[in-house]
Length: 243
Image (cartoon, rainbow, N blue to C red):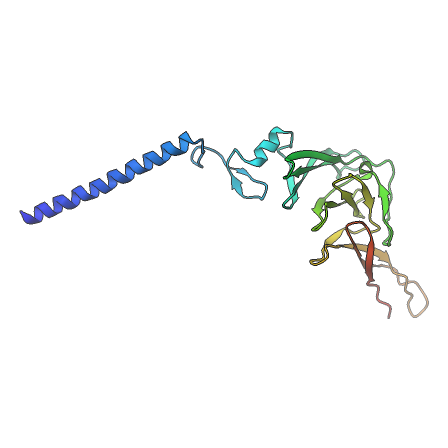
């Protein structure tokens, strides 16, 4: 009789614990509904600015409502800016080229801006040799963008693209005054120096050496060039090997 009473008391205790847990779970669900929080069970997560899953009421969703295309890809991000690229349509000048729009979101001002849309080139500049002097240009002179990077310590963008299938042209864009300059490089961007925030660029140059018979060796070699955020030339390294 005593053993039966103990078993009955244990069953009652288990039932009470189960009942309390059920009431707590129901209350939590009701609390989420009343506060407007949508859980993963009732909503499809979208992608946030940092690439992590988030709810439908995210910043990215609000930017969609402001006109940001849903097909954009985020190419860089800082504490102040988020940079997006969108492939708008195929270009006419080359079957593999794409017209691209570049969008900038400013976290501080909460403004979304379409900074530029690449244009069809009127002519082709087949070779942009490595050098020291930048060339001022307009945003409408940018015909292709593969990627865009924020300078670490300045409100500047480095954008790079190719529209002739052989060269990558690189530009520095000032996010304040929207001015642009073309760097004297032709093979794209390698990275920023960790301490100074300088842009390390790559180019190819044609070999000038001759062989033992005095004939040109031909071929190409790499030139590495470093520029600051204002386009000032810092230093270069020519990797041509002359035996």
